[in-house]
Length: 400
Image (cartoon, rainbow, N blue to C red):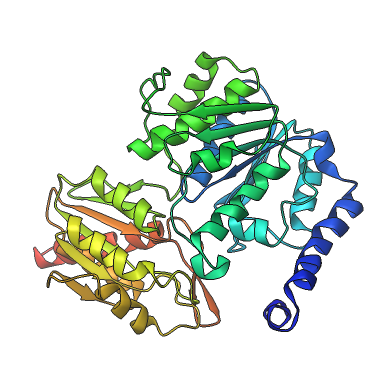
């Protein structure tokens, strides 16, 4: 139905159609965000982690918090997986979630705000207290038409949020987001920041940025720095975000990285290791431009590359891999469409001390091939294939 409307309706009518759903939802649930402090986190990368860290800080300060991200819904202590294959739910679901948070007695709601969600008006009629900008790099360019239009779409969250803006000053697009009026504008920067992060367990410079963004949110709400740091220190990891699944005899990590910028930053963390990388690219006509770039980055850092299905949707899966392949000029790669077999092969290639990194899906619960949604979790597949590998090795040594 939605795809048909996209084809037949002029843009202004399509915008009205999208706006109608949050309007009806807000009316039905009595504009629930009026009774909540809503924090919206947007950017290309890091949104989910910032949502998680913000929630932990607010909870450490004694508040009851609800949050919604690409990985889960959470209201107080109750949480459940986001299995919708979309970060910002459409129709009535977002307003319904806000109403549930209000009824549960939450004071804060932390939302991951996507460009697609903004484009489809899902942020409308939500009373945002704080807007957070993490970073910006090319993504969803086919959907938006250009990088500038993608940036403008992200900017709509800041145009709507009048109270507090929190912005990554080190991002080249910072000045664009700083131009929107707000009662208070707060920046964070690794180049100028005086806040010292003590004993943070999350790896990578990008996670330092994520932690700083969350701390600035906490400080903006009157939470002291000690409480913010205490909360950050307690976070062992974020599901599917640079998550270690196997430790010995080689390491296996799973990460959601699916943009060139995110992929390179993940590989850079482990560049002293011998890397065996499993990667693909999303289908459905999304961001075809990035496919050769992903191959180019993999070649730069990985000793062995296995190209495989990510979520091809209705696209030809083999053609997607061929487009990634265009960025690889060496012969250290192979194509295995079956994602399980690709993961199994990566484990078989690994020697003690090596590091296997599987990117693109993180903890996503589905593998979308054609019109089918196949239950999936990279982390569980890794564990299952690793057990098979151990059993095969045991049998080869004469085990009984």
